[in-house]
Image (spheres, rainbow, N blue to C red):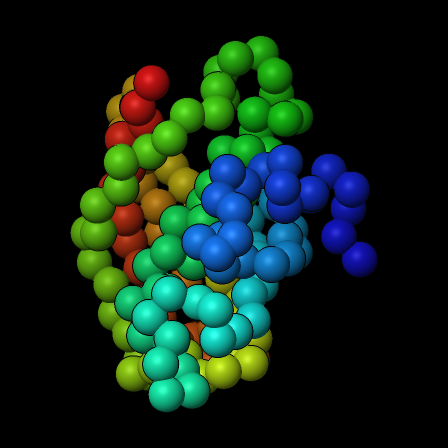
Length: 142
């Protein structure tokens, strides 16, 4: 059972229908792990599956958990909740679509490269199979 401080509405700014993650499994340091179940209301859903490009958004939302958790647990202002402009550095997909009802576990790690510039590295799995790896660069905006 998730810890109370892992409340998804508190840590993640996204709201349905754009919020894809539905469970925060863990947050530790600069890494978070989340889970999401593919449903027909997801963007790009058609013919029983969603487009695999949504793995990029799953990694970004999982990284948002790290920032939200730091903002809640370290309220000194060092981790103010701000939006990010994110670009895709690299993405590798090992499947073509995300089937309806698939349970996807996503892990993302953030690392500060400069004051407002971060690198996000993540992967997504269905059961024990890695289905995608994503590397993002993000700039925090005021």
